[in-house]
Amino acid sequence: MDPCSQLSLAVYTVTFVTGLPLNLLAFCIFVVKARRRLLPADVLLLNLTVSDLVLLAFLPIRIAEASWEMKWKMPDFLCLFSGLLFFSSIYLTTLSLTGVSVDRYLSVAFPLRYKARRWPSYAVVAVALFWVAAFSHCSVIYVVQYQARGNDTAGNLTRFGPSGLEQRGWEPGLLGSTPSSRRRLRPNMVESASGMEWLLPAFLCPLTNYFYFNSIYISSLFLMAVSVDRYLGVAFPIKYKLRRRPAYAIATSVVFWVVTCAHCSFVYIVQYEVLSPNGTATSNNMSRCYEDFSPTQLQILLPVRLEFFIVLFCLPFTVTIFCYVNLIRILVALPNIPVQRKQRAMGLALATLFNFIVCFTPFNLSHVVGFVQNKSPSWRVYALLLSTLNAALDPVIFYFSSSAVQRAFTNCLWRAQPEGEETKWEQGLKGEETEQGLALG
Image 1 (cartoon, rainbow, N blue to C red):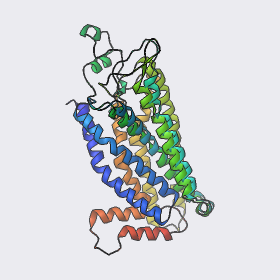
Image 2 (cartoon, one colour; image 1 turned 30 degrees about the vertical axis):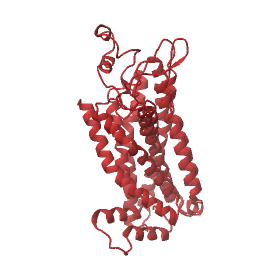
Image 3 (cartoon, rainbow, N blue to C red; image 1 turned 60 degrees about the vertical axis):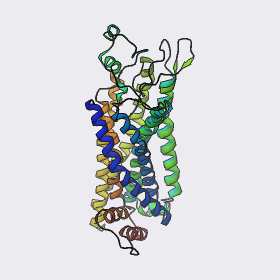
Image 4 (spheres, rainbow, N blue to C red; image 1 turned 60 degrees about the horizontal axis):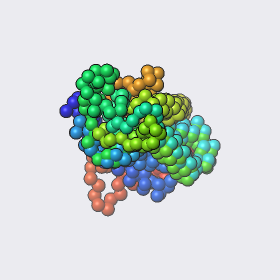
């Protein structure tokens, strides 16, 4: 097995083993919290866990692919569909984290006004917008696949998946080329001609990529939303509390999912159809999953990636930084705030910014580099692996986002609760329900 496949297998396995149980636990906690008292931050964090679970659900497919040295053996449609969900999940996470940061900032900066207007319905609308933005952007996967024009003929189904091998060039009939013709190809195309075939069922290729990219972008959106929620709860505690409706958070979550799913649907458009010289659509032979692209396909894909960088990364990251920097500044200036709350807010801010910088920044910077160089950078594969780790790091954000989550994690990890005794996280839920003023839980 080549080093790239080994690294991919290790990252996917670690992310799946650690991320799945933690996200399932967080999901159960937020569901119980929502049934007791629905807050905008809970709506955003709940959708963040859903985004991570979507990514984790398709990681076994990636693990199998990596164990077969990145060869796709599954149905064709699953390649694009999984890619759409994968990239949409990434950007949904980014937007969700941004939403949380805004919520926290408004809670600190405008505590009274935000408390009065902190309605969950706002979060619902925001989540809906996040979904729309992420999915509509990632739908470029389908656009690129189906719109290869001119003299490009059908070659091999290429993969736009977590291994990040889409930087390798695409030529008609590449696998059938002779050694003499391969010498005329670019070095990265020779590498493609020598291996990296997709041997899984073809339909799994787009499907896994769809969920993979979906999780990246949905995470960004929800991180943004959480930051907004925290900020509003601190900046405008009264106004935000009065207008804090769960319906807003639900609507926001729906929007996030729709946006990311719509964007990541480009996996299918890019993957399945290449136009022959006479303008008729032809399908790719399934030996690779969204890996190679013709120059015509790159003309579509690279500008779309740049738009991803601006809309689904730069904007959420900027909002998140603004919210958490001001949130910390306000908390430090307030002497009457308990130290434990200040530490929890700062921990949430640092964990969110760390997630953005480590998991999302390298991958999104590859969009800019690829647009400038007119090709995907060679290090994009490693940047995309960092984005996968986001599903395992998000529980850290959940831990700092709520005292109930902290107690639940502690209760599960350190001691078994006797039957009939109230658990620590149930105590935390009741404590959070009685909290007034700062909206940090």
